[in-house]
Image (tube, rainbow, N blue to C red; front, top):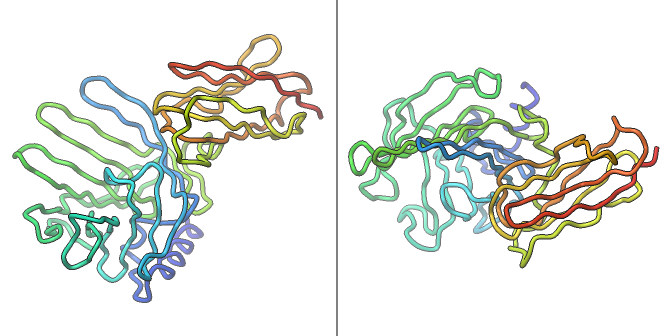
Length: 295
């Protein structure tokens, strides 16, 4: 954990000359960070999904990070301002008058019960709760921000954990509740929770015209190989490895993915030499291909 905190502080220093080393820890930003969430609602619908920081960019001397899929209901670039402790997303319209072309999301410097008026509007984001929560087996100090209590009783909440970022999102709309809970993450080179998390990477965000499963490479391989595949529509995807008897020996992917191009890595260190098969399954597509492990 000490190594992680040092890395986060170094990253904050790159974002602005005035450094807030405490607030910055609630929203660590680094290209390659991955977050896996579990979504569930009160009517019984559930799935898991991942969000990645795929790249950064400089706009008007400010450093933004691009998430795939996006945060805060937008695909816009996001940045943390170390002067104000505010998180901003880049917007071409409906932006804050005090920060052109940006929309403030939350103000992480807030103390308990502090409220921030969002972009001079009637909407307020309130720091409604602070304290420690168990996040993937770690006791983590968190800040919870409640927003949009309109109509009364409805709300949207974002929960930020020190050293982790967004650890939970909660909604109440009418009689329906829903939540997004962090179940695994890969932050600044440190893996927490889900050990399958780094086995798949999104390598293209353009929507493919059709599903496809590529031939693994290298092939033959020893002991690692890569499998590229296209997802034409958002939905559940399963990518599994089988031996010649039809026994499933490993599941590389079993989650909801957005449309895009992905690459999964398979490590056959624990298997014997021989022919293996890998199969991709979605609601609308199934394909199986063969590969050869030689040790």
